[in-house]
Length: 403
Figure (tube, helix red, strand yellow):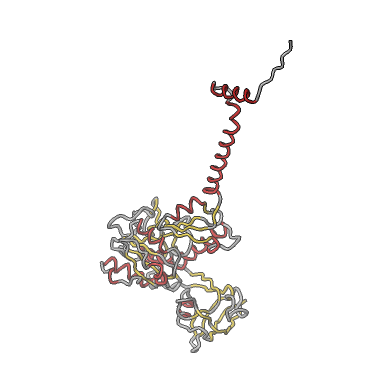
């Protein structure tokens, strides 16, 4: 007698439940568990990518390292000076550099002149991650700005590096000339016009390669241009719109060119010729700045102070660690810089007790001075040198501050 073998749905369910209760049939649930694990893993990887790999459009400035311009590193001084003193005709006499490390923080009672820097994250070629942005947000000493407010579209890392190094080279040159001029040395120079600034009255009159030989002011006085400082010092005394005559040498011929001066920049006295100038000084000494991987123009003032200290007997600082920042012009003017709040914190971290700040940066200084750091406002190399001497003598409290 034949038998039909059938199993109801209830029987199927009971059979599976029995198997599961016996530890059998678990393979039926593995696909569901595996999918959940894969989903979680994908989500985790996505979060990691967002945190660490996906760039965000911001740039962060943080306190960077500081450097003692009077110190040495592995026996090499940051400022190496050799040559002939034009006032004596003999080999230049230079104070021995400090044995203190260029990079190590200042110790109590150790006089130093420290240049300061800003560390930047998020520039071209090194875009900021979301995790780095979060870290910077909770760092009270960091500053976050939109990427587009710092770098135009299409800017490359190579372009930024080249610009920073070019500014550093120019800063070293201007600081050397300004320091030697402050010491009373005559520094002959050839001043060449590279072109007119856009919209200036010199546009279409001057030519690239014109060698500037003299400037005649509206009162008829002719000022010979035989050094780096004359064009800049003179124009600080001439009002905007003054009718100027410059004498240039072009293709072996001497020409007189006339046009009106234009307004100087904000907070700058006098006016400008409206031309780009390059200066080739005939330096009586060779000054080498042994510093790598640092760019920008803001160390000019501290380089000048370091040169003056090395070329004058004794320690200018009187055993006090002093930091500072500011651009330096050929004629000894201290200019504003960026990131001064971060630079003050970097100076404090590395042991500075005093900080020399450009007067034009005072609005950014007020209310942001680290506790224990005393800030002095300066606008010229002469003022900065006087400030260092006053601090060394113990009368730094009489110096002007940012208020």
